[in-house]
Image (cartoon, rainbow, N blue to C red):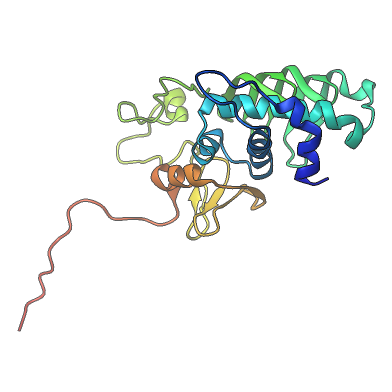
Length: 246
């Protein structure tokens, strides 16, 4: 099914009323934003810049369009769901070995549920038609991520979570990462937390060197700026060249 045919099926559902303040986002743009998000894994921040829509607007568009896609296409593409397997509480394993445990409805995550990732981290959320709301991410070591006032490893307290839990090492012994000893990073790459990032190909592979995703511009810049790299860079005072001139 092509984009034009899909748009024809969904146009009336995606249509919104213009207001005196601004024009509504056209159905074709709503569909393109959602397809780009689903196909490439781009962040909502990246889509916000690319399509010149607000961040909350892009988020609402993706959520509403995903629900509309399911309502219109699930009988055509998937047939009638098996109610015994896809309704109520259950477990679903993705090809990436991430698995979901929680409430399901019509073959989608719906209600309270948790995604468990292969690296040991988890994402607990309230789901609506496959879209997560009010989520909480917990790293493999037990550290919980906070969207606001995130002070972990900032300029005021640079301790890793394992150092917070178990104390600092003796003077003169450095701990480079939360995991001690640290992972060995492949040549020319960065350790971005869930895998190794190659800045040339812009591909993130997991720690078993399997493909995870393509990094968008925002993630690329964040990794280059903040993540540990394979090579060392000497910073600070540099001695002047003392070679004698003849």
